[in-house]
Length: 354
Image (cartoon, rainbow, N blue to C red):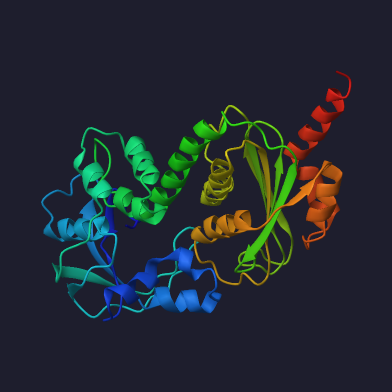
């Protein structure tokens, strides 16, 4: 679902090569791409054909093409489908900081499903509930073990909420990460704090994460360090920081969709262990990340990082020494920007007087 020309946008399914549905699933499964190289992901995504038709995001009912596309979006598995184009699709490889790489694109004139979609019962139930708010629908689907990527498709193609509309994919990605994140925050806030400082470390696609969890009520701060010669960073180091306290986040993050994707991974871990913590994330984007693959890289790298065995520390000084030993950026360049760590150290100092 595009955004150019909003509220009239280009919409349609991505069509893989003529292969089995089982093989086709690998073309849209970020969790399975963790062990791949950047060029392999680009090769997968660029072989998909974007089939487009122009639709108004508010007035799309009656479009047979969209109805077929919605049936595809509801399916848990790829569906054998045939698409007719007005003319041969054009070769146009596109990269984006939020969306996955895209290749061929063409105007769709006809879409036929050659088999029935496999729709999970939970998805069928929620899509049929036109009284549920979109945020409630998203949360119930997530709680029902429906894949986050499946939920994003459903929201984007106008199948969730009371006042249903098409949502550009880049917006639906961040909206889903944010809504699910807020759901988890509501739970994590009531959990007891972790007992010791934890540091998790992991890396995928040249994106290195070090995550420090501090024994406090939930708050979050994420630091992005773009190293020289990483994608879009030029020849100098660029650092951006954003976060939220106990009151939550009121404005859209200066880090864009990456903030909500990273926060989600930390919250999923805290829910799993049944504990609360203040979360400090250092994401170092290294030169090895030479082509943007989309915000899924942040989400899956964060999940991968939180799955690693943590190191435990009694003091924040020891934890910082451990973290800085893995970051390529000099300690002095980023440490002063970490407000959450400063607040934690100051609070610990005050605690000593009581």
